[in-house]
Every structure is written in structure tokens, then in C-alpha cells.
Image (tube, rainbow, N blue to C red):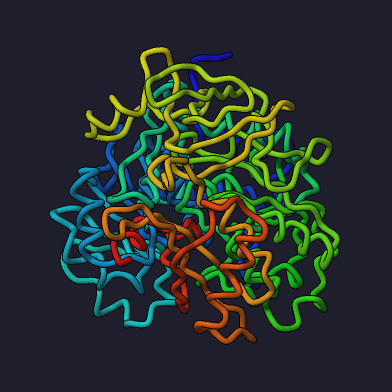
Length: 516
């Protein structure tokens, strides 16, 4: 394996294979070819250099999905800078944190988000992207040291050879989702992108040049980055992207319009699409495979999806720290409700809290290692010490059971486990049981303390036809008692309009515990 690699050469490989005129990205009515993506990325890289973003200088990206994202991300890599994509649906204080924590030289933000970003620049230069779609007049925004991306791309048009970087050089940082606290910068290498392609994309997706991908999870997140950039560009396929919130109707509309063959989403959204009025009449016939990540996919959602649309959802577990999915079901080896088996190239291991290696049938803390593992958390020495072992393993923070056949069964986050009547209880089994009830749309379970004793509380989003109240509470409690062990039923149930989630659909149980 060659030591030298710049991840942006994924574009050069497509041109070398004669795919310069092939559509790389579809965005609404717009189509961008591989040759055009390379030209835009080269111009973006030249512009970033001109603005002072040199080798390993950070470039914070506050951008919704659009072709501009591909240009800036790959252009930064090409110039040797470090793109840092962050959630474009956050608050000014969050952006100030990302800029300060990363020490960014340049911030590229959609013009519609300029007002959210400007107060936290701390001396970084601001580039406004997608100005035509901005609610405010871009002319009013371009004050001080700010630039319009379109103008910069035109001014700095031309070829740009990729900087000579090593496979292990720092390349880009996603930020952790913040499901357990403030996001942390996750440092990835140039080789990590190719590693996810050679493992998951090759062995699980079997992606080819004929595929068309569409992901409801956005490009700023590591899952979405693989789905809508790394995997399709590696295979010479086409990526369909969409700006705006991924509502159930919007996702289904996009599938019907652009006819993807691979659909990537999260359990929460798959469940919501199933419950969308008229879903059974939607045409998903182009989709050969659906993929799920972010949270464990309930067996009931898997069953109903296949029954309604005739398409299998492959569930798996991944993380920002491993960049994409490292343990997954496959078309030929699948068990609904499980996270499958390790993707070729990755290893998993269960350990007790004391560090003892556990065998199959036991439940323990999941450790993983593989070729796309993070280099470090940025400026987080204590977190690095807790999560990265001396022998090359990463502590995922998830509790798992591995059965006799090697399938992995999610039991919950290590800090979500509950001890009731002296026995450990996983929230996941209770949540899955509640979801089987026809009047439950979503459910999350946490442990709370009442009079010094540990109790189970369920937060339930009722279905459209449900009538939340004491009668439904009793019915749901009896439902769980009949299907679970005596110590697993929720003594308390609270009905909510929605559950707190991260941008990728992970339930933030710590917020539920705090408000319980």
C-alpha cells in the first residue's frame, strides 16, 4: 500500500477512467459532471490558499448539502488544508465554539447562515456560498473581510495539483454528534476515506458505476459524507443530494424523482416515512437496498418496511470515530434487530468494565479497531486516554451482546444501562417492545431515581390516532409486562410530541434523564 495519498485524487481517478462527462452530483434540476467537480474543487483549493489556508490549516464549513460542499471539501483537501464540516442547523454560540476549538483560518458558510456565523469568526475570513438562495441580500452581507464563493471560483479558476500528503497525514475533522455532551473534533487521515470504500462500500454495498445514491443524512456528518461523496465518487457512481430538512415527504419525493438505487437513512426517519399518509402508494422500485445507521433499527420497522416497499434495510453500527459503518448485516447474512457482524477489515471485542475480554453470549462494552479509526480527539487528552487503548482499540461506549453465530445485538449506550431490582436492564428491548404497539410512533427509555430506588421511565410519542392518557399508559405497561421480564416494564410513562435527537436521529437520552 502506497504511503503517499491525497484523498482528493478520488476525482482524478474518475477522469482517468474516462468518466469526466458522467454526472457526479444531482441537486434539484442541476447536474454536475466529474470534470466540473474537479474544476470547482481545484478553484476552491486555489482560493483557500490565496486567503491564507495552508498546509493543515482548518477550514470550518457551515454548509447544507449542495455541489458547493463537494467543491470546498475536496478543494481544501487538494490544497492540503483541513476541512471541518459542522451542522448547519445550530446556534451562533455553537459556531463560535467550532471556530475557536479548531483554530480555523477560514469559514465557508451558506449566505443564509451568515448572520448565525459572523459573531463567532474570531478573525477567521468568511466565504459566503450559495448566495443566490440567501434570504438576505448578499450585497448587504459582504462587509469587511468576506467573500462570495462564486466570485472566488471564477477568480481562481485553473488546475491545482493535489498537495503531496501521506496516507496518515491529518485530512479532515468531523465533529462528534454531541449525543452525550459537547461535540469533539475527531481527527481523520487521508487514508481513512479510501479505507471505508475498500471495506464497507466494496463488501457490504457492492456499489458500482451504475448506482445512484441518496442519503437523508447530511454531508457534514461522517455517515452522510460516505453516502454522498466518498462511496459514489470512489465507484464512479452518481450522488443525489438535497438541501433543506429531510422530512419524510421530502425524502420520498426525492426518491420518486431521482430514482436512487441505494437509500441511506436512520431508524427514526424510516419509521416516520412508514407512518406518512399515502406512504404505501409511493414508488420505491428503483431502490435495490436501504441502509440504516445512527441508532439500532427496531425489528418492527424492518418488517413493516419490507412488507410495504419490498426492500431490505441493512442495519449496522458506525461512528464518527470510525468514519462509517464497521459492523453490519449483509444481504446474504442478516438477522433483523441485530447490527450484524464486523465488516471485513474490522475487528470487535467485548470487555467487562474491569477490562476482562468476554466471550460470545456475554454482554459487555464494545471495542473496535480497523483501518479508518480516528487519529485522536482534538485537544482532548483525557478523552483520548479513556477511548484509545495502547494496543490499538477504540472504546465505542456501546453495550453489546454477541450471539453464538457472531451477530451483534445492541443493548444501549454504556451510560444508558439501568440497574433495576439488582439486574442490568437495556433500554433498547423495552423501546422495541413499545414500538410494536400500534399506538406508539416513537419511544425512548431511561432510568430515573425515585425515593432512592432505580425505576424505568418511558417517553412515548403517540401515533396519529392514539389518545395519550391514563388508559393508554396502563395499556402500554401491561403490553410490556406480557412480553418482557418482570423488571423490564416502565413504571412511569410520559407522552411527548417529539423526542430530543441529534442531527442524525440519535435519541439524546441524557436530556430525557435531566428533565425526568
